[in-house]
Length: 378
Length: 50
Image (cartoon, rainbow over all chains, first blue to last red; front, top):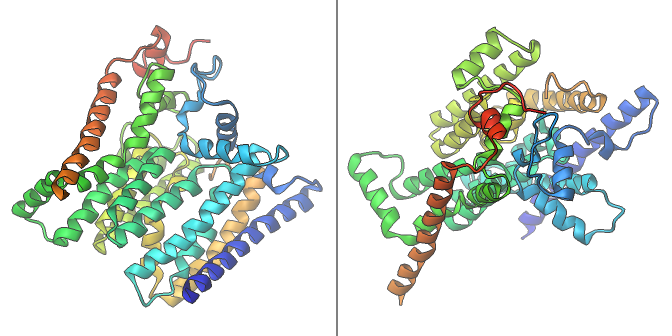
């Protein structure tokens, strides 16, 4: 009990320090511009506007007649929560403020859960580094605003925490909510399969073991139910889209209004790195994608196949079309924090360098976001 | 008793499988306008008709 309270206190302290950095960057921005804009207004940009729109007005059935955009490209659970919370709070709270509140709470819970998860894996570790990374790593600004990243990270952290404990039913419930929040969450079903296999046979593969494993799924209805639960949220949304728009895959089809597709991960990487259409930003995104892929390869090397497969598939689905905003998707993926933690936990010098760099770069990124000079990097 | 419970667990499993199959089948038959199909699905026109 004492340890739990102590852990919660240290995680909370790290969290407060990270938000102090964000607020400080906002103060610096206001000082430089000689203005006075509230921090939550500085954070209210790009996709945050879409989520607020969905929370306040629901989904539109017809795309915008000028742009071709439609808000059903964004997944429903996060705006549903905002709407729910808004119903219990006084009217003076705007939907954006509630979004920021919800996201920050999710980030805090994700940090605490992540520490608990790595302690199961490495019982002698304190594990605070992973919470630090979640609060301070570059591109984690999205965890402070009305974006789905924080909630998605929280559910994936729950998923890996329960899988580490071999409690697959709560893990499946966490995967269900993750997939309801962002489509990438649906890939947790493959991680769940791998965790189940590891629980039964370790990482020893043979045809007879594979056959026994598959047979075990169908003869154990609870295990089958756990696997089938994971994609329920997303399929429910697909069905809703059919009723609303007449197209089950509307959320995927609408993407054409935002950008063209490169139709393949390697093509995306090639064109963004070498034949860049949008200059430095494309190269930055492509290099960030390579960084993410290397981290997932490291997870494979450490035999963390379940986390690696989730990372590869979740990032791969985005890279199939384009590298836009890939840094956000990578840093919103729990597998990345797991890989970084494993990479740094026994390397004190590297850990110090990374932690200091994180604070500097993240502080700068906060400022850039507030200044609106963010499209090329975010 | 345990066997009955186990058997009962297959019911939600079958319901979920049926629901997923139903949604997947619906995916093959979009009920949309010609413009929607041309722009978003077939990509035969370059822009959303205003």
